Every structure is written in C-alpha cells, then in structure tokens.
Length: 152
Image 1 (cartoon, helix red, strand yellow):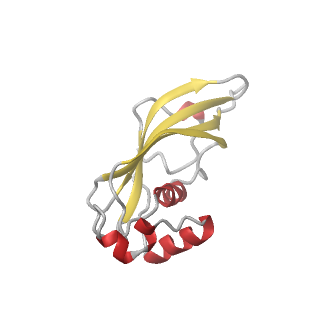
Image 2 (cartoon, one colour):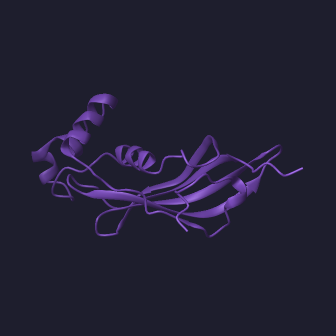
Image 3 (tube, one colour):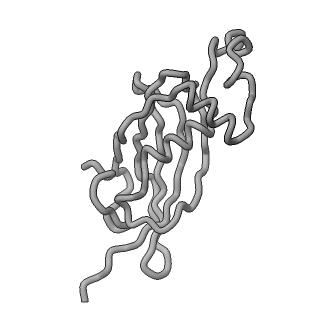
C-alpha cells in the first residue's frame, strides 16, 4: 500500500509499513547556488569547480542540508493527519549527491507511540535514494499525528 496517498492517521500505521517511493527530483547547479546564497554556505566543495575536481568526489556535490530540504519537500505531510514535525535523529550522509542526480524518498515505520489525548508519534526511517537506487542520505524522522476519532 502506498502510504503517501490518502489521509493517514496515527491509527493507520504499523511498525514495518513501507512508504513511497515519492516523486523524484533532479538536483541542479542552480539548486546548489541558490542554497549557498540563501544560507551563506559557500564551502568550496559545493561551489568551486577547480577545488571540487581535486576532492575525493572529483566534482561539486550538493550540500547535505540541501538534500534533506529537497527530501522533506518530496515527502510532504499533506495527506497525513499531521500536527507537527517532532524532530530527526541519526542523520547520515552516506553518499554524495552530484549535479544531475535524481533523488526520491522511501521510508519505513520503525516506531509508534501513543500520547495523551488524541495524538501519537510515528517514527519513520527515511531513505533518500538516487537514480541508481543507492541510499545517499538516511535519517529517522518523528511526526506527531492525530488519531482517528472513535465512533460514539
């Protein structure tokens, strides 16, 4: 079942559920330049062609936080009974995202906790994958969701 489709409440998730893949997006040079401009992060590995050629990657790569930002937009909470983004843990940038790479997100429910009231948290292990289906970024995202209202 594609859990990105249709309104999903806390009650609808089970540990082990798979989500995705999301739509995909190609990372461009413009993305990297705009991100550097917005954040002030002009580190040469991202913005200096000659410097990056001499690096272990051999070319410029996307900022890790840019990859996370794009991934967040690829997996929006619009179809969830979403109340709040609760946080992220264990972020790992395990492979570079290069100009021209196309990324998408897949996820798995790894934890679920009821809270007081009509809410609960769901923890998702999110995987950003490139066009070769290689994991490039992995993290655990926790979201606060509403529970379904019980019929009286």
